[in-house]
Image (cartoon, rainbow, N blue to C red; front, side, top):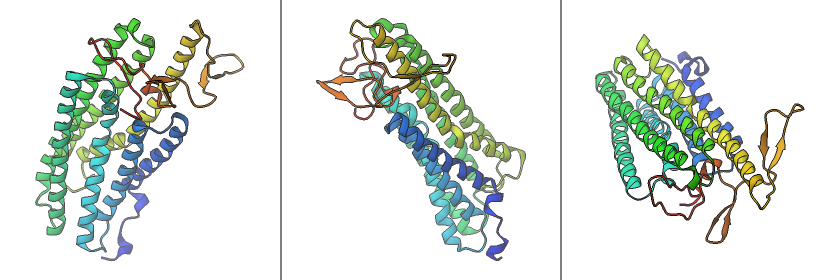
Length: 335
């Protein structure tokens, strides 16, 4: 079959999914100019770029007919690895936050659970990659049932690790909110962060469970040929859009913490200059814009740390965790 008989790339859903990834990557760069680049902001960038690349390679591996089989097998292998980066990488958004919040025994318990499941996820995806390459080289679908079963364990593991992330996030933020007198900020930002963690739990956990169920009915490799596979394609589309939730979370949390910092400084005995305020003619909808992109100064060993993401400024660093309710969040740019 000639190359000209191949389906047009932009007539397939893979092109749209790849375009979503490219768009998220560009939007992420724009957000980084507002919130500054950090470990947290790198996660939506990396996962979006990986998803865009994987979906493009999927078209080459499974929808083109005039290319060597070995080349298509290589493209399929790289697509699976990039999907691993995209799908497992989303959970690192919560991991980065928790790595600067949890201490001592709680941190060791969380890290052990997280990395154990991540090893399982990686092993399952690598096994899927090898099995799929063998299927392409053999020119049949003998291994499709095995691939489906491996995907069930893969997506259930992703849902499990996100539930673990959300559990530790919610317990830490709830503890900090209940002991706001010992914290550097009031309870409102913690209430926001709790809602944010709940949204991430709901979306990623539901997507993981949904894909585990729908992928078990997959009959053709990377093709939506029945209702279940179409639902799986829908769930994956939601997964591709998830970095948008992260970008909104970064911008919204910056606004919340900026307004909180301005309110706290205005009530202190030593007045500090608050960020400039942009208001409408009716003085409704107050949005803070920092004049020099530095909102909160965190002192550590006498030095001032420059601007960081607003989710990275929950408490002043340098205070050891003494009780379960006293937490700290150091600058994410350096642990």
